[in-house]
Length: 96
Image (cartoon, rainbow, N blue to C red; front, side, top):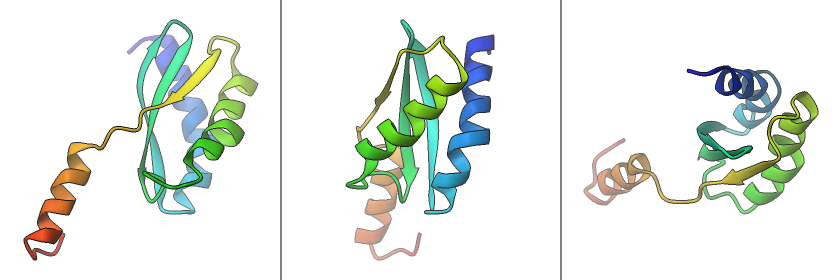
C-alpha cells in the first residue's frame, strides 16, 4: 500500500467515518488515480438521497483540508455484490 493511500485512509478514519457511522454508514476508498480519489458509501449511506451532499460537504472537504495531493473526490454509485446478495436473500425469504 503506498503512502498516499495510507494518508487518505487515515483522513477517512479520523475525520469522515465517525460521522458516517453515527448514521449506520461507512465509506471505502476504491482507487486513487490522477489526483482523484474514488470512494463508495456502504450501509445506510449507500443510495442515500443526500450522498452527493455528504460527498461534497464532508468527504471532499475533509480530504482537501488535510492534504493537497487530492484535487477531486468521486462517488462510485454502482450496486455492490454485497447489496445484490442481500436483496436475493430477502426475496428468497431468508433472514440476512
